[in-house]
Length: 142
Image (cartoon, rainbow, N blue to C red; front, side, top):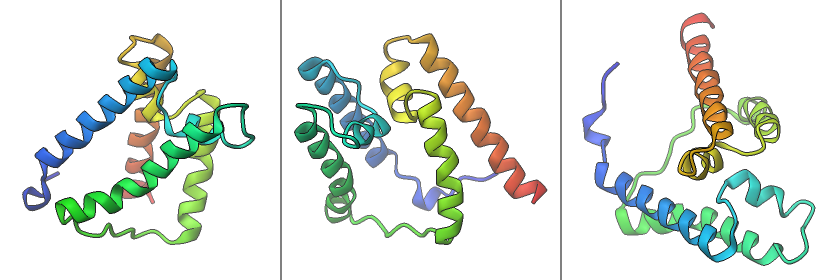
């Protein structure tokens, strides 16, 4: 395995990590809520009373952020090598897993581990093991 040093961007990655951390702390202090993408979306469908505006704003920010970053940092367009069918087949187990784990990698990884949650540690270990296994199977077995 080698690192593609021409596309290695530690400063923008650090800036993104800091922004995610600040957003997570802000949401926890202001609303007492955990920042996680699946939880944000899951609270919109079906809508929970009083939760809809801030959840919709957060989802809007997640969708808008890459466009703003592209303008500010002149980032290249992402290239997705998989077709729509592959993305759907891959996405369904991810959605099932986030419901099963009561959260996604962002909620467990950013907020859960910061709060020293044993459940989040178990979820992250399971996510990572599944990811490692999938990459190995796709690249070396199939």
